[in-house]
Image (cartoon, rainbow, N blue to C red):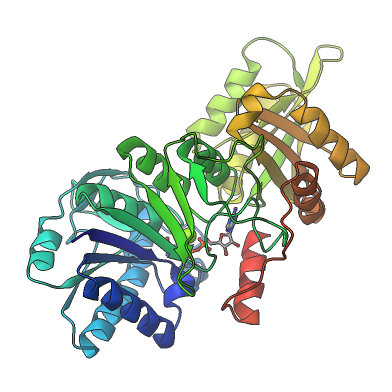
Length: 426
Ligand code: ADP
Ligand code: ASP
Ligand code: MG
């Protein structure tokens, strides 16, 4: 008998019919003689709708109240799923994050799991129930409800798989695994059989939303093997695990894109020691999560600095920059909200020269202008105009020989759901 942790994302529990399907799948895992712990996200677009409701009432809601609000989404799906399982004659018990013993630090909205005390879940499993845990939420040591950042149910699943010493951690979503690029952007993307933790972490951090990067980080730390697969088919998905010789030795594993950041350029600031430190200390002090940075060559003792950061940090960034400008002798700043980051990821890059040259060549051929560049040993990222993101992903995918012979086929999503996904990615 194995212990299976199975996580279902928002699309997988978006309607009563889909919750029925999840219930059937869990019961079938149970009938095969396994213990089952499900982790669920909020139904469909619930979390976005709750964010919208909050914004209608308060431009800057407190992080504590946001967590009180957002944590309700997962509680709706957990109880409905337990009821659906009961209706089929099986025992089930739902748990909020705190009931399942998900203990976090106290940073509302971006809390980190520090401990898992899942004894209550174990007891219910021993009594024969299918356990259903609300994803994305926990409780701090001061007994405040916290959330784990968008997409955080993935992290709940990995943490529970570790805390319960599960045999399998399955993450079900609306794609049947991890592809060499988002298949909705690059229809010739290939499903990968296995991906190493290192490659997956770079892909997820660079915007491949199929898994939350924190979940991959946790999985790597505690050696939890993740099976990313579809809730709409039985096809085997992608295993995310320690690198091993059986993994395909391609130079590039995949291409990720991210349209969730914006760019600010501070113009004509003094080029003297200590100025960059002032700029980035002020941004850090205002909780702005800076990603890429580029500084121009200096002319007459003045230079420009550009940096990117998440759209959600824009108010705080502008506030910091406005206050900084007179202090650092800068002329003004320019905001560009229409940017995208495209990243090429692969452990094989380490030992293969010429990857940047090929990537820049392909982008130039397709008239994609590069605004910024950054690298890590296994990643090359460029910032480009957001309108060219699909073109850039596809041409890089082709250039690095990743194209599959077949075209990706949608399995179950409605036209409305696909449109919502496309809008979210923009
Ligand atoms: P869930 O709601 O189940 O957590 P998400 O929407 O968070 O699902 O993640 C699945 C989505 O990730 C897919 O719909 C797909 O468009 C997107 N995606 C981005 N990059 C990739 C990739 N490399 N492989 C597969 N899916 C990807
Ligand atoms: N419901 C949360 C979100 O939409 C968490 C999750 O789905 O993983 O981000
Ligand atoms: Mg997700």
